[in-house]
Image (cartoon, rainbow, N blue to C red; front, side, top):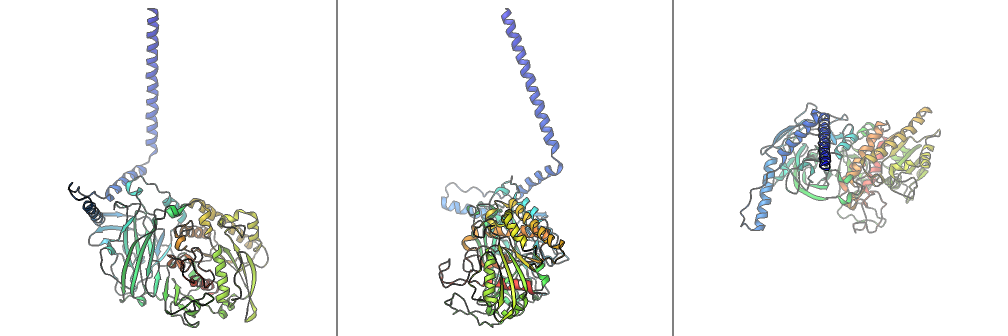
Length: 630
């Protein structure tokens, strides 16, 4: 008996202990849940609710079940057709007022960045996608996609960087999913204003903006942006990159505009190169989609639209951060043959430019009639005019190997020094006019792909080396200084920095370094050099999917430009990315990473004898416009 009583006491104690332990655990859990709930503010809860509503509105409805005896192949085709019809029906019947996420590059009409427009998304069968309403400042002259504006004055389509761009990019790049439409990946698009037309006819001069929507493999709407579309608008005498605007929710727009002088037949091509910023990854070739989604034939017909006349570039025109230019053609020699020295002398050297698209001798560009213009047009320099501009000046280049090619091409083709076959990555030399020895120009070039001029793939990180920093400082510590600096963040940065956040830190440091150098010049009472930031090229052909792909380098251009502007360093911008983009789809004008390799009558990368080098030669003339304009 005593033993039994002792066992019962032990059991009672154990039961009481377990009950108390469970009570403590339950109390702790309730307290934890209360803390979590209290930490959530109303905005967070509201965002969760709205995101779920958003997903419900944009999810497509599954097609009706087919008869079980239907042939499997026919059933699959019918399902696909019904699914596509349902997607288009959903896309064209949803009505929703939203404030669109601010595009990465805003559309403007002047040098001031406009506020992001408010969008009234009315998706119906009659009007397709209605984009921004008219604003008093004329931000968008053509709110309804595909609708012509006949007559009157229309402004050129222009664009500017988004304010606080880097922070905005980082927030979009790190945006979380959580909903099916935010987790899905784009494989197709729908463009109601173009897809439903057999014959596309637009008025030349007018601005035509078409909205389009990203779709996943099931034809459901994607509601997260960041896809990278390559666009090309090409005709016999016109080649440009139409502006694509990303509204951050899976919807985009493309703007088309052709000057009335170039009315005719065109091809509009849309390629999806990367999905949701995947081109910014460290190994982007693993994520490249690179699929042509559309190729439309469009006829631009003359109307009564008047566009502002393009004027020859002045110094103030280089303030604009982003250019939306075009290549136009005024002569063509179908029988042009490459010479033994690899050059394409297709037009006579004195073949004239056509006003207002350029001035000077177009034949000297060796482009078989092509020339580039943007918000202003460029003067093509003769040897005499270029020497008159550069005499007694000191030009300092800091950037990648594309600088090296441009300097050599300027010496050979513009300054009439063909006896200089090449220049090294790092040099400091004086060059004299062969026709007037009293005219000299000092050119310094410091390669920034690596602190060791024989190596690569460091980019802005080359400034981590103290010896390299001291080398640069030396040129700005004497009594005589360069009067102009031309710099860029090169393709090497696309290889070195593992992600956007790390590159941002590198660009910050580079800007702070150069600010320190310029501040030291000011403290000594000397004139600070003019600084022109030249954006990096759009890599071409096979290199479109590598670590320095166009998606990544365009974003890196924007971030670096913003950091250098914030440091008060930028006098002007030369947008070489925009200049090279229309020619980057293959390797006819580039070897993948260079547009200015010297002429040579030998097999080029695409297997054809010879290559076109006029794109970089055009850059040499644009640089002279920046250096010599008043």
